[in-house]
Amino acid sequence: MALEEFRWRAERVRDLYDRLNLCERGRVWTNEEFALGFVGDVGDLAKLVMAAEGARDMPGGRAALEHELADCLWSVIVLADRYDIDLRTAFHRTMTELETAINARLALHTHDARPDEAGGEGHGP
Image 1 (spheres, rainbow, N blue to C red):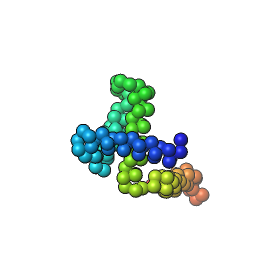
Image 2 (cartoon, rainbow, N blue to C red):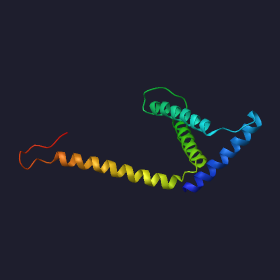
Image 3 (cartoon, one colour):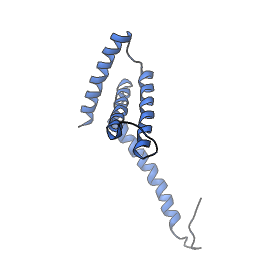
Image 4 (cartoon, rainbow, N blue to C red):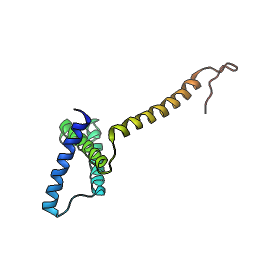
């Protein structure tokens, strides 16, 4: 599924939540409430990851983990839309920045692992 399809489905569900919240509460969620909901979902995700790794007991197993990952993705897509952020562009830019930073650090470690031409020892921080 392409990013645009994810975005379309996320927006459709967000619109349904807006309609439901208007009926039940007389208002829609604010950006802050979407962000707080996301934080709650990330907390649930962390517990489910711990359960998947055997560190705690949680009901639901893999299906619950899949659900929570999808919830988190939904929140990211909705927040990006609310703040008019092009996720495709932001993602590629961020990955490029991270690759550059990681490669620079790896280059330092590669340099440190080589014997010093003069003394035979590596350079360390």
